Length: 102
Image 1 (spheres, one colour):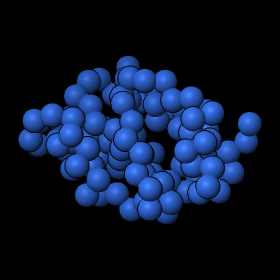
Image 2: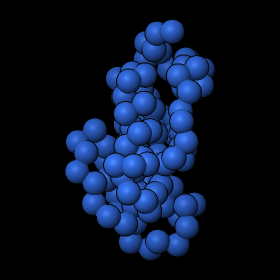
Image 3: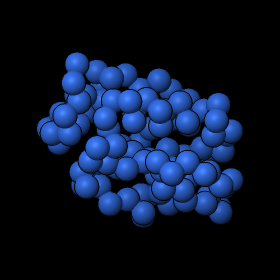
Image 4: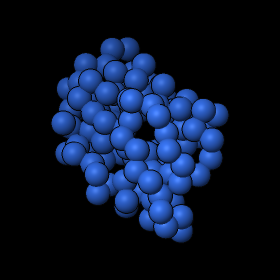
């Protein structure tokens, strides 16, 4: 596996992080990658690995917790409420060769 996309959140999955997950999937980023979300509440989306945020200290701690479960050679840290541009993702993982088209 080449790519691990990490998201830390303490907000409602449906209104925030799910939009980022949907975008990543539509860009083909899961063809050779994984999404790991660290948050205090359980998420039932089979596209992601869920890591419970037991400490709830801050985003940095949550990203570190998520990274411990990462299997990708490259780790990407993403916000739970920001649009992920197709162009940016394509540039970031271009060298990984996962086949994102224009």
